[in-house]
Length: 445
Ligand code: UDX
Ligand code: UDX
Image (cartoon, rainbow, N blue to C red; front, top):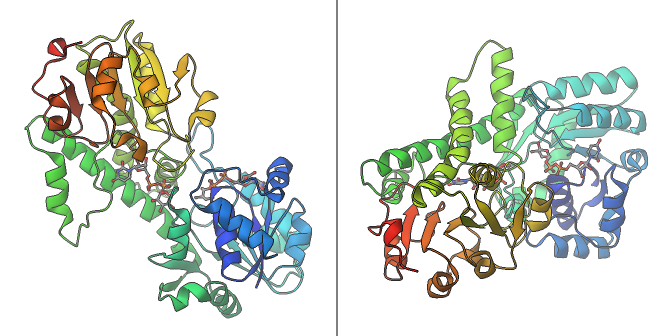
């Protein structure tokens, strides 16, 4: 099939490269000319494991092209995917659909022959109806079918998630569109990935409901972790014990500093707003959002308590800035709230992240960006693991201890256990588990 992918961000670029790898001819379009120019030079603007090779291979094989000319790409395509950003709208938390609608208007004018227009960006329930109305209003003669095809890609594992999905959801009502979309995903279909055809609005709600449920599941275990901390229980034992029930499942039961990223925060908030507007509020999701917002800020209090209740003039080393490992994405990262709150209490912050430093520099002030974990720990009164990068999973605590002013480790991702560091004189604090026996004041130099 000939495919136009409008929007070459995290989702558009991964989806375009994977569809090209299936053998389709894909043109990735973006309004950002620098981004397109970089892609033409095989420079990938985002950090996604395996993406640079996949793009290079498919561009070399002349299955993947890059352009700012949306009209030409659409005119030559059987399927047009809309994968532009749908960020939270300033102030009210609704999804900002201005980019989606702007693209719909441009697409309407460029359609030639029967074309399927598929929204891949996460868009609120009913957006497909509006996109179809816009297209038919601008180009009444257009032979078009507007479908919903949401993605379920996780950053850092997006290519794997695209190629081995649990399901492909396609919301439509047009038989010709069904045949086209079946053809688009045939390689996956052959891999037995279920192709789930639903009504268009169902597909839109499935995406939001999935993200909101996953966000809720994380907030659930995060609250259980708080209960564990006041009862001396180990939350990891609780996670494992409930997760073995296949009705619950063990995924997304890792207690942490709260969820971040470009999706969970934005999508749960947008769903809450949609539901409120429709007079059917989702109180569980509203509470999930509130729990998560408070939690990210609350993590700084845990660090301050670990430092004896005061960080004024003290140095705190932050390991990990991105919202999760294997990405450079800083959107809604817990580190942003944690660092701001610590600085508000007078802490001096040093930080290191394997991939997020460039993005973080424009978001943080007065932070010393370090070369590596050991450089970050120099003179630090506390070391805080915020993102569980592999680089932080086997730290040399002997070496760290010698570099630090006091040996306090706050592990917000439960990467370690207190026995891993107690022998080296570290006071150890983590999430949902008893603090280490050492008191901060006893932590030897
Ligand atoms: C996007 C949505 O933000 C998200 O809600 C959905 O889950 C998946 O698609 P992402 O790919 O991360 O996620 O968006 P972003 O990284 O912002 O990339 C969007 C791209 O579209 C950018 O490269 C932007 O330049 C481009 N764009 C935006 C256009 O080409 N045209 C426009 O009119 C607006
Ligand atoms: C998510 C959804 O998983 C994906 O299906 C959707 O398409 C986009 O949003 P993403 O946000 O990229 O993907 O990352 P994910 O791995 O889901 O993590 C989201 C956040 O939850 C991260 O901040 C992560 O640290 C946090 N998380 C995840 C936890 O705190 N605990 C967990 O057990 C899992």
